[in-house]
Each structure stands twice: as C-alpha cells, then as structure tokens.
Image 1 (cartoon, rainbow, N blue to C red):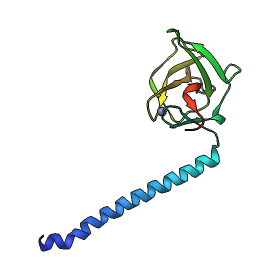
Image 2 (cartoon, protein in one colour; image 1 turned 90 degrees about the vertical axis):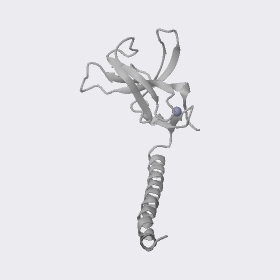
Image 3 (cartoon, rainbow, N blue to C red; image 1 turned 180 degrees about the horizontal axis):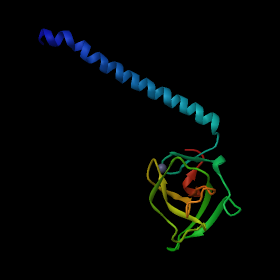
Image 4 (cartoon, helix red, strand yellow; image 1 turned 120 degrees about the horizontal axis):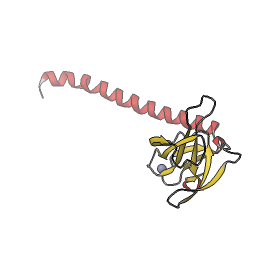
Length: 149
Ligand SMILES: [Zn+2]
C-alpha cells in the first residue's frame, strides 16, 4: 500500500458509506411512512392471492350497470366472477385497449396483471370513445384477490 492510497483511502470510501447509509435510511423511512399512511388510509386492502402484492382496496369498489360484481363468460368459454374497482394501483395494464367482446358497453378493455408477479388479475376498462365525463375502472377476478396474505 503506497502513501497516496493510504492517505486517500478513507476519503474515497467514506462518501460511499455515507451514501449507502443514507439510501438505506431513506428507504426505511419511506417504507415506514408508507405503512403508516396506508394503514391509516386503508384498513381493507385487497392483495394478489398469488404473491401478496397490494392491488386495490375494498373501499375502491364501484357499481357498474347497477352492481359491483358480475359473472361473465369469455368467447373461449371461461367464466369469471369479477368485481369493479375505481382504481387498482397494484395492477399493470397490458397491451392496447380494444372494444372487441367488451363486457361493458362503451368501454374498451385491456388485460390487467399483478404488478408484483404478473398473474392475470382481470381487465382495465376505459371509456371508448374517450369521454371526459366517464371514468375508467378495473374489473378484477374476485378469487384471484385476497384480503390477507
Ligand atoms: Zn401477484
């Protein structure tokens, strides 16, 4: 070890330590805050039954065509019991929206998968054509959601 290295070694290393420590502390703080906010805001989360990712909340339930839950059969003969939710931040929409075979007249759909594990959880619906007054929603397959891990 030469003198130059010896002198500067601590200075080179310390900023790294500090940054690593700060990043960790920040993450911890964020997750603590998130927990606190989520718990106070939402006592009834709905999670992905496969991986536990937080998907939506019981209080995000909405009625479409007069009812929250619907049973539909797709053109392949698969039947789904779905519930309608105003939002589903844990879902990731996939592909282009289409009105083909839509279960909700006036809405185009695209697949919605779990943002955590990619499991197919249902469909995201958006007004079609885009209507400033109408809001999109999610139709989620109820037995793929769970209240607790
Ligand atoms: Zn999942």
